[in-house]
Length: 425
Image 1 (cartoon, one colour):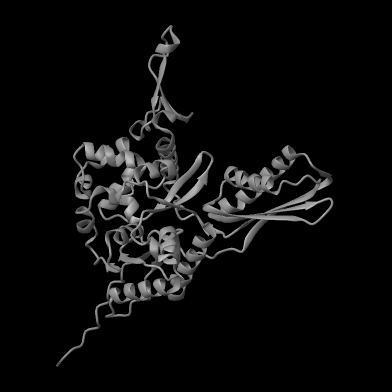
Image 2 (cartoon, one colour):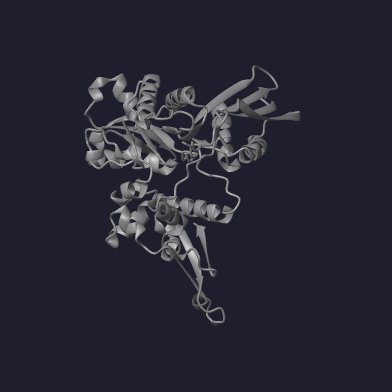
């Protein structure tokens, strides 16, 4: 007599992530608009207080040594025949929206990573017996059709791994990393693929650590004191620990804050003060909803004449009250109004999620420390190591004050010392 056994339940598929990336959007758009720029040294520059800095550069300019963040003067010194083009944030935002729309047509599980890439969850997209490579190719075709730009698509077990995969592809369009191969794949890559600061990568090279597997072989206990929380995150990534959660988001239409004056005022200092208060009112809900503003709109209702309406597309989405105030005050100065003002209205538009800061109930202190370290490293990268000083107590009882404490340039490996503190000059 034959007996039948119920089929054994299959283990649920592990979550997987697709990363879709548009490489070098500013330069790619410039080359598409004028084919004569293909193969020539081209940079796209953004204005700053002390001049223009390189936002993006062509491959030819890259070979000449031009790097993002350089001043245009430095770039021209390295590459005399350089063509400099102004940045166009409105156009780049349109391309970004087209990227998100293409991904959203495939699945609602879409999370933007930055203004050139997004993540897509694969749950329910690969039928039983189907191929993940087929899905990756479909995403690649959809993104290229929607943006009319070249794209790279990587599919892996987590968000950072899939993002690294797109950078690894070179001229290839798409690639799938099989489950369980994350450590093997990452281990053979140079350390610059890891999400580490430039100074950390330099320190690793000085130690002879140039491959990810060498970094992974370091003892975990020494990572945090020497390389900070960002270094620990990279170490865990090298061991296959990645975040597979794609957080779907809905773009809110706008946030608005309004102030009406009892009596019209014309004092610009007072107007700037009230604009700062409006920016703080916008920053509150942005922080609670984990969102950033991509555009700002300032409406100035005058005592006499038509209202003034000014808008600014932000090169980088912002959420903090100080950053929003700076941009809004710049709009006020741009208006140059001399007539008394009856009403101010500040609107945050183009809202997008703050994907760089993930909510974690059990590691808030560690996440905050990592953000502080990242900010201090950026300050030092722009203004030099001496811009951030770290204090250390030597001998509190010493009769001479210069022997009680000392200061030195801050570095991540000293962040855990309880007797020291860091401050930006």
